[in-house]
Image (cartoon, rainbow, N blue to C red):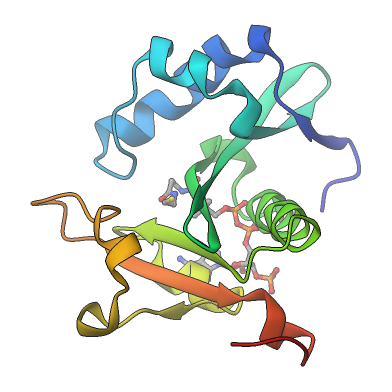
Length: 158
Ligand SMILES: CC(C)(COP(=O)(O)OP(=O)(O)OC[C@H]1O[C@@H](n2cnc3c(N)ncnc32)[C@H](O)[C@@H]1OP(=O)(O)O)[C@@H](O)C(=O)NCCC(=O)NCCS
């Protein structure tokens, strides 16, 4: 990853920038529209990537049963393809692992192949657990992707 990039927990004053960073991806139908008020309340769930004081990437993490859901993951267009997204997901995986979650989940409409490249597998809808069903929003036609944290290290239950 680019050496000038810092990854850290979000602070309340970041959330307006998280909102503007997300806006073009919401516009393109890649992210769910969340108001600044909603994002503000979720500050503790967010990790951000910054470069020289500029916010270039963000991701939210929220519990979904025994899994940790990564949501609102986006990287500023000019910073894409430089490993920032991968790094944010790796940090989310570290958070999940340290807090005892079994897996990391992501809901994605167009980024499925990208998540598969990071080791995620698509969850077959008929096998989707009840606790995950609410993650699918009607009409969005998105896929659910899962990365098993326990299996990754060959320990613990699947
Ligand atoms: C999807 C997204 C988060 C990826 O972030 P990124 O910083 O550009 O990705 P990275 O540079 O970390 O890519 C990691 C790897 O994926 C590969 N990759 C990039 N685009 C890919 C694609 N469309 N399909 C498969 N693999 C891809 C890269 O080559 C890289 O592999 P490497 O590390 O082995 O070289 C970013 O493009 C984005 O913000 N998209 C718009 C919002 C969105 O769709 N979010 C996902 C829904 S939650």
